[in-house]
Amino acid sequence: MAVDLGDRLRAAFRWTDPGDGTGYLVSNRSGWWRDPLIISGLGDALGALFRESSPTVVVSPEVTGFLLGPLVARALGAGFVEAYRAGVRRPIAEPMRWATVPSDHRGEEQLLGVREGLIAPDDRVLVVDDWAATGAQIRALRSLLGDNYVGAAVIVDECPPKVAASLTIRGLLRGSDL
Ligand SMILES: O=P(O)(O)OC[C@H]1O[C@H](OP(=O)(O)OP(=O)(O)O)[C@H](O)[C@@H]1O
Picture 1 (cartoon, rainbow, N blue to C red):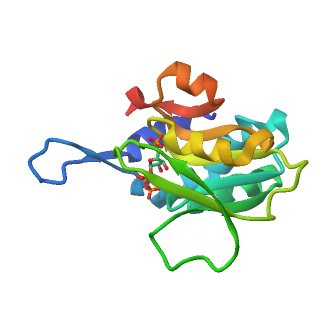
Picture 2: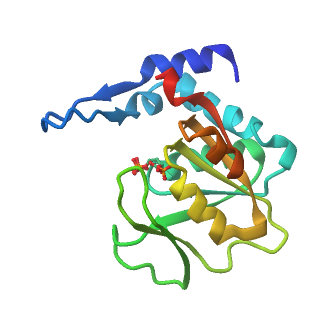
Picture 3: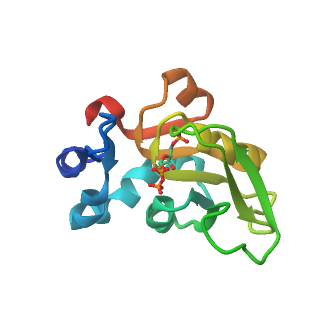
């Protein structure tokens, strides 16, 4: 990663106090997408983490992944497949394959799904997301993708190192950088 991309990511990031009295801060990542140099550099930087695996498809969970995944797919010359969260939109018309996310960083159970037929047996799939907290969503996608899964590239990896290693998660920043 170019040194100045890491600096720009740190500078454009904010923690927000939602003011609900819990003292729990939420991440504000909007400054990343607002910075033209970050947007132009992120695809290459995340793709470089797995370029040696020659991914053919990027899969990303909504909603932020729908912004980030195509940047990485373009940088790698790969295609893009959406991973939808159940219940946040009208039902998807096509047949889906779903995986349960037992408990993510919010402690909520979710379902992540991709349309059937978009991943070929010989595809090498890179999961891309902005943030890995517990790794629950990435683990669910790995279970869905099986042997097609090569790893996950994220902007911020704050998973315990053993979790990151077991899921082959690579990040540009650690949680402690922010
Ligand atoms: O490692 P985990 O515990 O699974 O958490 C990681 C997820 O958390 C964030 O999503 P968020 O729910 O904030 O959704 P967003 O994409 O809509 O911002 C992030 O974008 C990952 O998808």
